[in-house]
Image 1 (cartoon, rainbow, N blue to C red):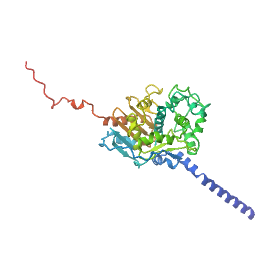
Image 2 (tube, rainbow, N blue to C red; image 1 turned 90 degrees about the vertical axis):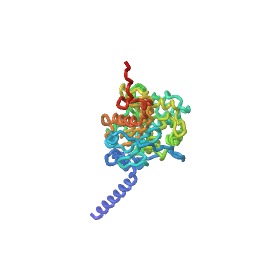
Image 3 (tube, one colour; image 1 turned 120 degrees about the horizontal axis):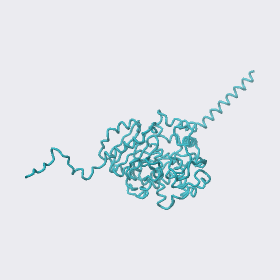
Length: 412
């Protein structure tokens, strides 16, 4: 009997040792999975969005060694009264407003700070679009009507076979992809778990095999289309996205802090939503687009690409928000009014008409509620219009009143 007990004790000890060892080996994977599961929980969301590098593999996007480009302080803006209640209601974490190239307002909320590198989510798509623009302009990728398989043969036989670069740029690939963030088993959430556990984004994309409609027929927001743009850029250049984006966009912008991408298990940048940088640095991209591609003494993008990429060219439904080359165009926008947008309340709003850029980050867990995006746009327009320069003849106009010069009396 004692011999049996000793054997059982030994088995138990061995089991405990193996269990502890396995837990030690798997601790990083368990920690990452826990972060993904709780990423959007009310108790963690604000801190998580400022510290995504603690839970995911990352790759720095070098800002270079030069000085930061100037963002001078201007006269403090008296923002519309509604802005304060909007900040609270939408769990805004930062708000930077520039007017005429100067900071008119800068504030941080919910315990965040100016140095926080906040998660972009889909605002990152607009950065990738800008990078593609530089490659189109220098002839590296001369034709947007080329097939994606010309640059990424691995996509032959997949759902992306027969899709052009323009199709994915305008979110018109026709590929079946469930973008419901509230559904645990949706494609977007399965992709996020694969990213967190060291899977490969290329492999995930190459496994997609179904389409809803022919490519180019209709716009439908499919985030994985942006990853395909990244695959095309890598195929055309033989370069990784972080180093190429650094060279062509980030260093010329003169950012204050080094941005970073989340990456998959092979070190491939999560280009569709994994860029992290300070709010002031997000605003610098907006300023470059406000100035038609020119910033900090550099013509980073041509004026033509800025206009093309921010025009509502995709086949969206009539009366709905417009879409260009990974940029959004609000309903009723004038030419030169457009925005980058990410889930949970991330925006870069550009208004060339009034000379205003608004960069804001948030941890808005109700971002999908009806009317939220429209309300955000309304607030941006209120801010922008409140900072608009007076009309040229406004100072010459005089309202009738006591100070008006009297009409001469009739002499007859």
